[in-house]
Length: 608
Ligand code: M6R
Image 1 (spheres, rainbow, N blue to C red):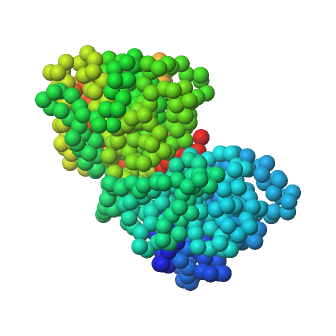
Image 2: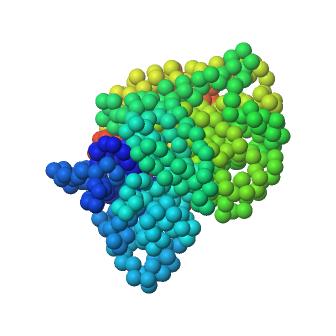
Image 3: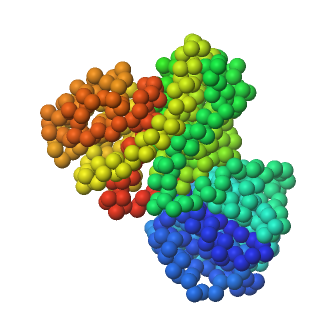
């Protein structure tokens, strides 16, 4: 959940670290800190609150030095204080550590180190690392880091520097990402490829159990037992412009406006119009095994699990395979029943979500077949899958996922079509889906073109503290997604529900102070949705309907209507998502919320 950045090389480190932190701060923004070495001089600056607070502190300070580390924190152990902010030092102010993850046995190690005379100043788990490295340090940093890591349990992406071994940054990972890039200016390390993209797009993704010694000229990678590892740099496709706000007020709005491009990217080169099928290169290696599966479980968290809800209907109707959605954080605690004929599909934007990774571990231990739908190339999840489909949405910076959500839904449609064509789906039926999929980017553009009218509706409703969001069948997951976005960015309560469930209890909440966003495309459950809207109206509830263009009847029973173009029932979720993302965004703007970095949250949830 935290962001880390490090530099060693020919240039002054501080501006590069601050630039990196500006990018990394979406990973955690409770507090931040930097440490820079200039021969024997060490400057350590920390501040609580947003990165601007650190910027204010360092303004006017002279902080020379060509090696340093920076960190932006999402608090787990210990409150938001300067003492708890990283980097953490040892007793002698020789060793400095930044860390993303959790050291589970920190208390035991801390007790032992304190008994040996080490003095701790923070409440964090991380500080045990700096003292443990100190304990083993005899002049060679990587050796001390290796010995220290052999003592700890948990998850870490760490970077360590030592004044007494100053020409290197030592980094290591276990279940938390670390990328390395070395160019003519020096060596860069970060938790996110986008952070160092402006320096090079060639990156080495560290694997679990690896340590790297990064210098200004290169990097050497070993395992924890000091066996050398040969690793090739991966070329990251993202562009710099994708990682910048480019004139938009917020990344969230920019990323909402990128829904069409993101859909184009996930569909590009994959639709086989003549055959009525799809080409998914990532599935070729397992296509025979896929013929053999008779059950699917989709495992994901948060918004990605809501995309999975849409996928459940797609995979059953078009793929012809019984499918269930499993929440990553629950999966391994409930003795899941699956066998060699079960396909486990993992969905994750970041590819680093700890709960989803834990579920993957369980599936792999039991030799299950895994398929990933992932955005971040080279992420842990992507690299551990048997096969995968990248969504190619580009970097997503706002904490709330938007463009990657619709890309996940589109990717699930592609997988459904692939499996369906292996089974019962005819060529003409497949062609119909392919044709309709290809219409999505233009249809989404059309909705975005009408965003002013959605903004106007959002402004009128922004003061309500509660919203109900309902959808049925394919659009149930979208109701959950719409409600989550309201909570996440606008800090208002959103209750996402299956339309049919409302009358079984939650209808008691509805009155003229509790409006409902109703997803009612003209589809197989349209009539049922209309009945639900009538039930809401009868209790005085206001209704904002998301309906199919051309439906005039809906205007008679809804207070406001947002139209979406007509498409296949299975693809309406992609279209219905757009007004809900815009609505949540504009409500958040009207309420004056912190949009790209909502309170208490972080983009990538790398703790269980
Ligand atoms: O990176 P992932 O897709 O695995 O992340 C899962 C959730 O943490 C994520 O979707 C979260 O719910 C978003 N902030 C939703 O907008």
